[in-house]
Image (tube, rainbow, N blue to C red):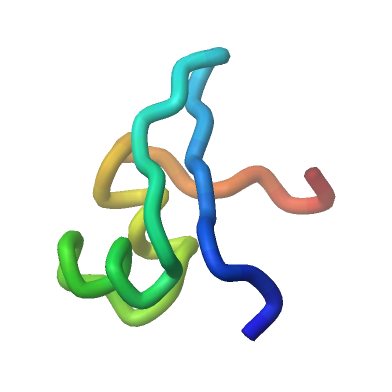
Length: 48
């Protein structure tokens, strides 16, 4: 694993925090990009 914990920040606010597995399970997602999309309703910008 690349990391033990992941934080997702949206417009300067921490909106999710946990291990990648915890976040994917909690949001019924296959990967962290899906977690981000389900929480924010937006796609991750390419190249950021």
